[in-house]
Amino acid sequence: MKTQLFLRVAACTALLASSAVPAEALAHGFAGKRFFPATPTTEDPFVADELSLPTITQRRLAASDEGPATRLTTTSAEIAKRITSNFGIGLEASYLRFANEDGTTQNGFDNLGASAKYQFYKSDAHEAVASVGLDWDIGGSGARSIGAEPFSTLTPAVFFGKGFGDLPEGLRYLRPLAVTGSAGIAFPTRHSTTTVDENGDTEVEQHSDALKLAFAVEYSVPYLQSAVKDVGLPAPFNRMIPLVEFDLEKPINRGASGFTGTVNPGIVWAGKTMQFAVEAILPVNGRTGGGRGVLFQVHFFLDDLFPRSVGKPLF
Image: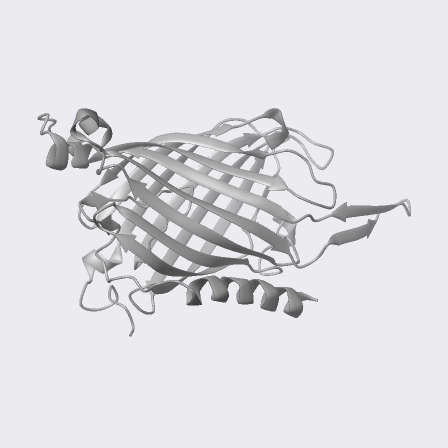
């Protein structure tokens, strides 16, 4: 069953990629004059050599039938590597720590994540880029004690980015705006899990397919200063990009319910070879569960740091 599902999803992704037109090689995150930062919560549309180390998030989670209220701290590392100028792969690892209200703790690695992405379109004139990709949450690779699933989830998705530098002169102060986003369907390789408790009662947990939507709205101060009007902001403010990210998910079968997710307002400071990001984490509704949180990320542009070695495509 797992093999059939993987082949179905992979074939869908490959079909989208093979029908696309090839893109030109590009510097990290650029389409024309537009630099798109690596968004820390949602996936950006570029294929690049990059390293996020670390990404740290912390949130309060309410008590449930399974356990007491807790503070969850997640520390992640993610690396992406170009195989060709337009095709790349990635690997992500996350370590979770639950500091429970009753004084106990649970620690362990979540399931590993692997990904592949093909960038098929770029327009410098319109500051636009698009790609397709496949994400694989590798079931059984994490610790069951922290809730890592024993089954895999495969998510094919489409990614896009669009800058507004082609707006007319009368709207020139909106030109620094840009939007990136993605849409995909997550397919778990197991439809349900059956457990029997100590009293002999049977419980069936459904694992539904899920619609996953994500997008980010950005306002680039570097673009404002260099391509619209130099308003004289000094360092470090002249390298800042305020943004708001939306990360949403909705089950679509087997016990489907409404949307859950977070809204993450924050700021990215982007240099030539690295960037820093900090965001608030705000649940979109009570169904999402948990309280507010915070995210911090350090991100390295390997293709700009090491353009003649590890930062260039393999082929």
